[in-house]
Amino acid sequence: MTFSTTSTACQAYRASILHFHADPAFHDDAHAWYEDGLLIVENGRVTAAGDYAQLHKRLPDSVQVHDYRGKLIVPGFIDTHIHYPQTDMIASPAPGLLPWLETYTFPTERKFADPEHAQEVAGFFVDELLRGGTTTAMVYCTVHPGSVDAFFGESEKRNLRMVAGKVLMDRNCPEFLCDTAEGGVRDSETLIRKWHKRGRQLYAITPRFAPTSTETQLQLAGELARAYPDTFLQTHVAENTDEVAWVKSLFPSARSYLDVYDHYGMMRPRAMYAHCIWLDDHDRARMQETRSAASICPTSNMFLGSGLFDFARADAAQVLLSLATDVGGGTSFSMLQTMNAVYKVARMGGTYLPALRMFYMATLGGARSMQLEGTIGNFAAGVEADFVVLDPQATPLLARRTQRAQSMEELLFALALLGDDRTVASTYSAGNLVHARDQ
Image 1 (spheres, rainbow, N blue to C red):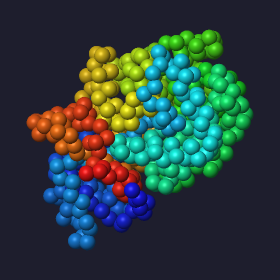
Image 2: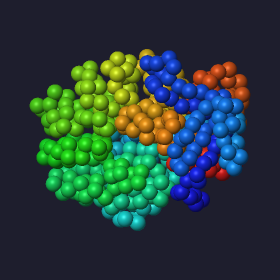
Image 3: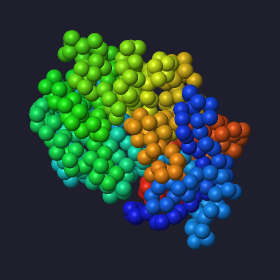
Image 4: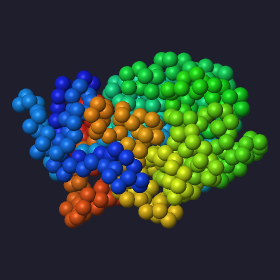
């Protein structure tokens, strides 16, 4: 299906509407809910969101109202950690993280030296995100600069707000994926100049994880982050205990795994750390102090047996939290399926996550973690009009359950626990339809 990337002047959408202006874990009045709502979009940005009865009077007769009554409009989902080159190796068996990397990940990523292969996978990957209602993601490419060009090219065609970067990796990896400290960072700077803030594209400096970068590469990556302070930085930390022990052997003077990154100046706003399972309270305090954010990856953590994220301690430290699929360690592109998993991870750790908070983490929580509140993540006036239409009647079971919902929380909980890509009726980016479910 081909969609226009140029927004029509003014459009309106009628449905139930939910969005957030605060974290419901810390604020009683954190969300706005309009059972019969209207979202007004002009030139790709939100003009207003509110009750239909009040807002429709403001519309000129010439404005078309798209009628989605019986459905729910929420901001586009934000996935803060995902690997597009791993699309073709999702659901690959392995006894743990490190053998999984060696057996599947590295051989799969080798293929991205071919620009045509990279472009084909990038196109499929982006369409799969949109099928699941994800309009923004923080994306890992491979060590090949062409893999970044391929991804941003496909994102740009659809006018999406995406963040991505070339992986930096100069040791403890196959020779065919090994760059150099200086060469990897030099390539990254070239890509920053080419893509960062080009349209809706944003760049992330991307050391894969501490064990696959030398101290020289980490030092240069930190310097690059300081030279371009409005870029993003993304990496992995404290995913499983074997990895933590490996980092300790490679960086014996570091207080902790996270301290390795801190030492090289990589903890700052717009820094996103995936997993954050095996941190201590000092680490969490540093994350809060530096406004570095944690990306929670529940399906991946369960799939690889890595551990359970500690919500109680993270919330006590007021760490910025967001939600992520982590494909291909993660087992679904769907942020609804990811909510299903994170609910169970939290329960196993003794924390109860209301559906309202899960939807917050997948929308405004992601935007805040990325320092993009005011750009994406809710329906405040002037925010980019990225949104998703969810269908509570998408499957027979979901329809049966939601018909019996007695509250907004019950409705959202059913969508989170029973929903998947079939639940996404339509996805809009900057006010344009970029995915429509087959009826």
